[in-house]
Image (cartoon, rainbow, N blue to C red; front, side, top):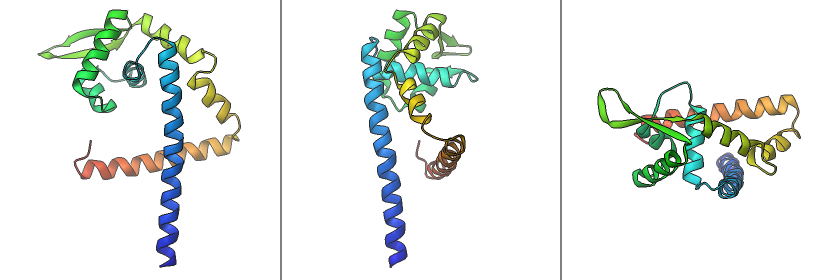
Length: 160
């Protein structure tokens, strides 16, 4: 019974740790998005496409990765396209699907946001500067291990 309690306590502490980090990330993402005239979904879309630049990102794929409702996704994409931060192009052979690309204007805008004082990237840089190289590498390795395991569990259970 003590072993079960110990395992439960460990998993609870880990979940609380992730929730705390996530809550703070969300808080800073909201701040940086608002300060730059974006909604959180718009910032999320730009980052999702930028982080997945090696693959073609359709609006459907962006929706799957961001978990944004279709109407929110569509509205956010429209706003980003109107600002010139995103370009949309119909996927060849599928008139209903749109490929999304961050424009040069969008890339410059994101770069400016990331270099902005008090932005999330500068905050993370300051935070990781407190870690040794070994601690940083171990943290990334642990996150990858947990993420890979969780993804394998969701894939087998039909969870997206």
